[in-house]
Amino acid sequence: MKNPYIPFPMRIDNVVIETDDRDIKTFSLSFIHKEDEASFAYIPGQFAELSDFNKGEAPFGMASSPTQKGSLEFTIAKAGVVTTALHNREVGEIVGVRGPLGNGFPVDTLRGKNIVMIGGGFGFSTLRALTTFVLDEANRPTFGDITVIYGARNPGQLLYKDDLEQWGKRHDLNLYLTVDSRDDEWSGRVGLIPQITKEIAPSAENAYILVCGPPVMIKFTLPVTREIGFLPERTLLSLEMRMKCGVGMCGRCNIGSKYVCTDGPVFSCAQLSGLLFDES
Amino acid sequence: MKTKTIKKKDIASFLDTLLTRYEVFAPVERDERVVFEAIGAGSEATLDYQNTTMPPKGILFPQTEQLFSYRSTKDTADIAVPSFKEKPQLIFGIRPCDARSFLLFDHAFDGDPYYINRRGNTLLVSIGCTHPQAPCFCTSVGGGPFSEEGSDLLLIETGDQYLIQIVTDRGAQLLEESGFKDAGKDALTLAQKMIKTAEASMGAGIEIDGLKEKLDSSFENPIWQELTEKCLGCGVCTYLCPTCHCFDMVDEAEGSTGERIRIWDSCQFPLFTLQASGVNPRPTVKERFRQRIMHKFSYMIESYNQIGCVGCGRCITECPVNLDIRQVVHTISKLEALS
Ligand SMILES: Cc1cc2nc3c(=O)[nH]c(=O)nc-3n(C[C@H](O)[C@H](O)[C@H](O)COP(=O)(O)OP(=O)(O)OC[C@H]3O[C@@H](n4cnc5c(N)ncnc54)[C@H](O)[C@@H]3O)c2cc1C
Ligand code: SF4
Ligand code: FES
Image 1: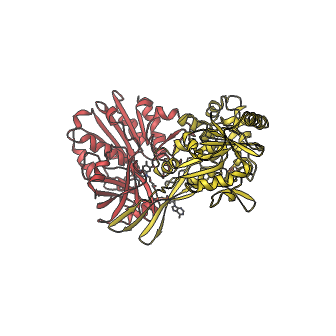
Image 2: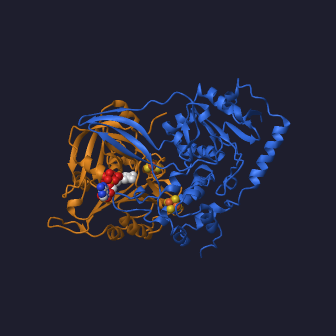
Image 3: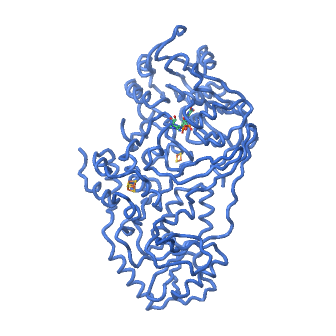
């Protein structure tokens, strides 16, 4: 039996400081053992537990796409003990990785459909993974129209600036960026995600909509997606709960009878409406 | 079903024979309490006890346990997984409720090699309860003072001897070469009588029929606030619960080496679900207490088709503010539909 608690080592190859305040970094990790890479078959939307030995573990969504071979990327916001320790790591150092965990986005269901992605904060990291996946040359023809709506508090908080620039030039992707408050250089949209989504009003025809971000963003965006015609079955969320084991045993991340770590983190709104949790 | 008998005075020597092949855990007296411990001689065990304060769950799911040890420097990380104990073990004198609790653990720890290896290596010899206690309500949650579910052998006290019910093949093997006599008709009749008397002495317990549906539809009922007002959030009920399996994982480090250990945790603590963002999906005692009840009487039924409570009554006996799970559940089951 595979021991689900044992991390394997990965080397930090590159660190990108994503935001002006330096609180969010993207780590590119390479596999040290070939067999670890072989056993790490993942899809966008899944996550892994990262270990900074002596400090512990924390869960992070893969920000990279499985179409990128040899490495994994994680975008990590500094929030507490483990994330701070990881932020202090440098290129060449070793961290532990355990995964892939969780269900991920239903990639096969999404094929042939139009996809609308709405992201905010570091929640955008798994949507970045999905976008990269869909834009892969071999994959692109198998998906319909792709719309990405991505917002941040201010321009300095936008992640993946290189990607955003590349994506902005493409004709097979509709990219909408917005910030809550602009700075002198920003000439793009200003406004909160729910409001921008309402303005753009992407068509729900043959489409799925994916919403990833902080709870308040999700809360105010869902009424809008409903209004523009997306059914709960076709509205997907990625949820966050405090996690430890990541494999459905430590009993901490449940919503009703479902464990977010194994049954999720991706759920449709239809699934969630059947689960017991406090509406707020 | 095959049954044997053993004289009470022969228990110690039977345990001594078992000790040659097994590590044996049995109830022993310690500071006016009875606890399960690994014994060195059969004479240390006592079967004259009602139930232990702590369930024996720690024998299969230790309170703290090393998952692996590591040596980590900036550019290396070597991991060593502890080897599993080969010697088979046996829990002797476990109560039927506690033996049944491992059937729930079998679901909860499906895929957990630490638990599964130990479980496969452990036999359960239970002892039926001739004198159920006031807080016991096993019969109302699918068990009974003489339930053999989960046990390999079940002892039933009949005067100066025990009747031994052989439940599994593994249990039968324990008795090979023991020379114990088959139970005669008198012993069987007497055992039946003991069982009837014990079962009849038990209180009403919990009304299970329709409870899950009632709980599910009362999730947002304000009654939870009232029901949980007294709760201190101390977590005693969960630590002493034989079916509670939640744990935390932490690194204990000394320089460049350390261990990742898992340690019992409790859903009654606020930090249990506090997210790094500051959001807590179960911010008050109300949500946490409700989680405990829902997990046992709704979620586990949904996930494993089993009630997540074995009716041992420990949470009732040991709660510092006398919160009684039976009363809580009763109040909910009597609620009118929330309009
Ligand atoms: C499925 C999933 C995917 C995720 N993906 C990502 C991702 O892609 N990127 C990302 O950045 N995050 C992600 N997260 C969130 C991430 O897991 C958490 O931010 C992380 O677990 C925080 O761990 P930590 O050890 O740094 O924080 P902890 O140390 O556990 O801190 C928790 C909170 O307690 C506070 N705290 C810590 N220590 C103390 C102290 N001594 N005294 C008082 N307060 C204290 C911290 O400020 C923080 O608010 C994801 C979570 C899940 C469940
Ligand atoms: S033992 Fe009693 S007071 Fe303590 S957490 Fe449980 S119900 Fe609350
Ligand atoms: S993180 Fe342990 S059960 Fe989900």
